[in-house]
Length: 229
Length: 94
Image (tube, each protein chain N blue to C red):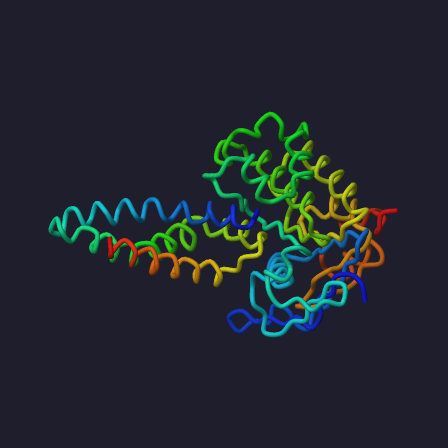
């Protein structure tokens, strides 16, 4: 069974069942768009799959290998959290060399997006520049599966398009699970769409399912093709 | 090697302020021939304190950087305790 499989994920927080035997899978070449209302458990699920948050029950495997710890998953999976995760005190060039192999580090440093500020420190970057760098680091890592939590959050439209292109380009040989409230951009790049609702996942076949399951109001009933070609 | 480099940057943020403050405190509060003992003991206590305030309170999201390098929170705390005790004893015995 190739690919990333997360099965039987259960998590209760403060007496509320956030995740109830949830299943999600992703294979290389696939972009899974994960949608859901605020508090539906999207971020919690990504953190559990990544291994930074414990679950009441979980089974995570990558290419038939059971994953029990962050150490085991470090070469296979990377996680982009909602908020900035890069240490403020470090130089950008140092961070790049910590995160990526030599070949990919050179690619990032030569990239037009980063070249102009590669010798600065993280605290000297704007929010958009920082987000672009965070995403570049994750997509250029050795990992085959990438979990993105709100990559478009607080990012200017120009950067959003750049991020989408990066994801599309790298999805040829990597698997992505992406969650963001900017559902149009998520739908635009996703090959599979999954909705989180009442602690469960539902695979979305057509745009109107998002209205039927109460994620979007009926006013949004416009055409949007699910599953990019 | 890359993960070791990452760890270096995690701990350099803790160890330098911890050792400087330990030394300053023992200069103020210890007799001259007990300064290294005072520095060592302060270091054992201050390093986990700096870890707590720097990474648990102030910059908790930075943990994800180190998680992506393969280190869990527990790993990082265990290394902090190990470094603070071992380096603290070395400083004490100087």
